[in-house]
Amino acid sequence: MKQFRKSYYNNEWYEYSNMIKRRDNYKCLKCGRGEPNVILQTHHKMYKPRLKPWEYPASDCLTLCKGCHSKEHGLVEPDSGWTLVSIDDLGGLDGICERKGCGTEIRYEHITYHPNWGYKSVGSTCVEHLTREDQFLSQEVLKVFKNISGFINTSVWENGVTKNGKHFTYTTYSHHQIRIYGKGTYFSYQIALKRKGERWFDYGEFIQAKNKTLDQVKELGFIVLKGLITNDETEKELLRNIYSRIR
Image (cartoon, rainbow, N blue to C red; front, top):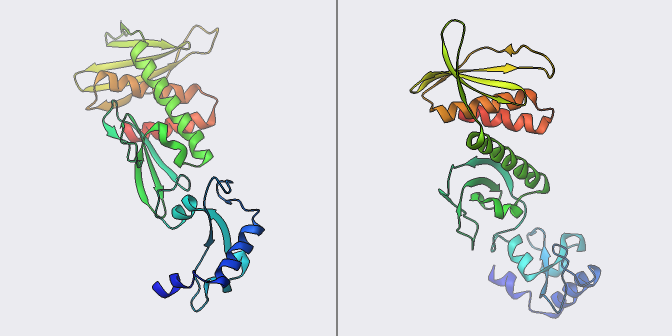
């Protein structure tokens, strides 16, 4: 390796490197910046045994600034190439963003993965690690989380009794009802759908919810109801995934 590094300090490498930079219009092909704002370097996309640095086909090399070059070699944490694995609502500022230089307390924990850096937990303000599609997904998940939280904190619940004398608590959302039966940590809930303009509800089956608090059951009921009435397939899939993880 030392011998390989020494070979960079000669005229052949200097001329070859300048050729690559000239081909790339003296700009970093990652960030688009050029001299004198940054230091430009020639990056080998792969290393081949027995070839000297200037003996590579030009297509095997590209111009990068010093910062982007370091990221390519894993010396600096990259800002791209991360994949979103999951997003969790911790319920409070109970997490720490692991992005280098951040370290802030976070509520919405994004688990990301990079093939060269492994797994990292970051907050919603550091999602520039992610692909454009994952950034959109992150925004959609956060919107769903906030929608659920808003429902729990603002919905008005009343008490009722069935014809058979069974007590329940219920709330109305967009003409529909969520009914919750039970007490303590043993509940069941029921979604009652109602088409606009019709008088009667269409009552669904009872769904068991053991070892849950009342607020947790309200949350489950809202997720199920929202999943039934939304026409947004992305939202429906997100709600389904959230429900499967917290039920």
